[in-house]
Length: 504
View 1: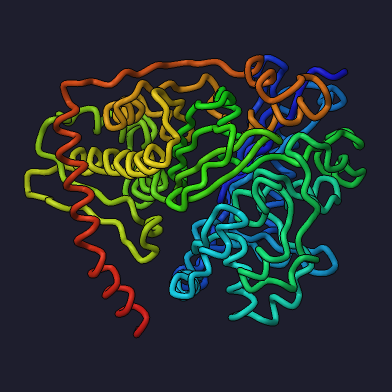
View 2: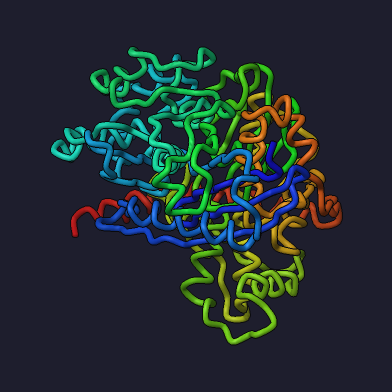
């Protein structure tokens, strides 16, 4: 039996390869940042050839950095962002990659809402349609890009594409397919009536076989071994929806435990023994045959900080700090009980309104970039809080949470989360919880561990703890109420902006 596990984590642009030992210690990490293209307003796509090229590069770099014999890698697991749509043509070649930030299908979602399509899908998958959901995007392609749609041979999620390139396997897993609303729940299988509700009754053949996340999907091919340095025949498991992988990789595996991810998306999830049947919950996923995750999410989290940094701070001349560290230091310099603007983190719309837009409110001449950044950090936490309130109302309660994702690396943001949410927050030892969760799935799949809980117990560890500061709670409560009121008031304005843009 080998000594190491390779975990891959494919986000909306970045792909990472990390080699772990059996205690979860990272031996090596390699990263490549890809490019998104936006050919039209609301369209967010990626070049699948570039994604695979970057995957090959990070795997090879990671093996070289670790200085190990690739034959000591016992298995490979992959996590990837959920939803969006990654399609192969009928010959198995890359056709189109649509990311989970895409909003092209907002009009279809509005039309379906008037037709009560969501009521028909919900009875099967416990989820209603939304703009970047995989079946919604497939329905959009069927209607508005019929020639492209006719060429589709397989509909994948992001990590399925990577697994396919590694092994040649045509597969997916229960966590991803349940998370995108394509599985009958709790039955965990495709359903013809569900597809028909989306207007996709003729698409069953486009969907790959569904495996359990830790089930072996295939093995590294000789061609891939030559490209990457991996050993041909190394098993690759079906993998995980990245938010589920991050939960497992941060130590969240028991019923009632909560995982909050401040990444590109705001992810707020609680593990339950039974699926919560409440239409107010945005998404349902699963990671073993007996447990589920109630998930409240939207593209409203740390992507806002990434945008600010890339547009305004990336070239800051500070040799001692990265732009992200500078942002955290600036935020920490502002009195949390002072005069701070309100920020809406809706660069890619909101969960409740796909036409919502980001904005700062209450700006004054004495506000500095530190105040603006503080508002952004708080605005992201406020939207997480709104999601958490929805979970609580549906019965998914918790009294502590584990925070992961890029936002957890800040020295100030986890404290803001603890203060805004009013619960203790823990940050896991590993910064790469998605890849670690995928590695735990791989090690479980080849029998190193009995199940996810055993693997998580062996390979994860807490690093930092934050407790709520009760003294600041009243100030956050006031600003959160204002945040919600402005959100409601802006709804008609966002609709008018969208209408004006449609005319140009």
